Length: 64
Image (tube, rainbow, N blue to C red):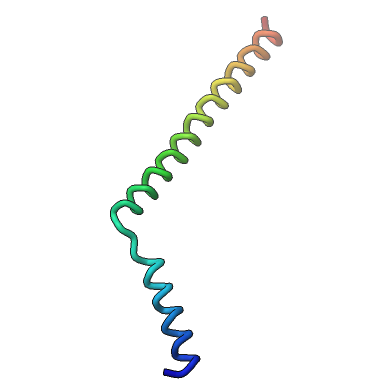
């Protein structure tokens, strides 16, 4: 096997290894995605709660 063929074979093997995910790796990825999405949703809810509270206070100051 030539040097170029060996390098291509190693690259193909690395690509195949990257594409194969076991059940544990898939569960880890799903858990990470769930945590990230939950964090984003909770942060957004808290942010909008305080924004709405601020608008209510400003409207009360403006119109009594």
